[in-house]
Picture (tube, rainbow, N blue to C red):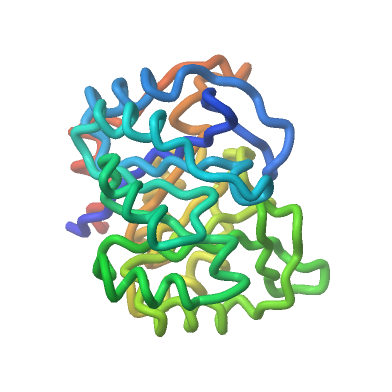
Length: 254
């Protein structure tokens, strides 16, 4: 049986938890501290918390809120959003965060990532990449919550992040975000070739989607947002997570 992590991905806007669709149309879905508490009670493998405005607004992470969320978590916590310096990373780790996710800054310079890996170790640094499919094929790397398009080649950027020393990659598909129609399997297969663990996010709506990304796509872990905060065709807000028995059977081949 393949062991793969199943990770809720929570989006922060201000002091609230929201969910987007294609990185737009954010809908309020509740109190982030309470959501972390529920996921912790449900024994989620890990949790990713992303402040979707911090980098675009060039502001500091909300350390007080992050510490409050981390205090409710009995699983590893990864945080991203607004991270631009070693001191910020140090404060986040002191706040209870095990992994720091760096996205926008990495599209500008890899120096902070290299320095962070040197100080905190590769296991503490996650290189995140937001991608959007091009009209004529292939993918483009975007930044600042997909409000800016870069000229970076996806595979070359991934390689640069790995060479800079990140211990893990988080690949988020902008076009499938919140759609719950399944991952872009061509994208999953292409990024899963990286020599470090790859977490894919964007599109999951069923357990079968999670299974396919791991068994057919080669992903090391799967992350999802809408699947874990909405329920039913009317997308009623309901924090949920698969039971241990379901997960135990999910990644069995055959």
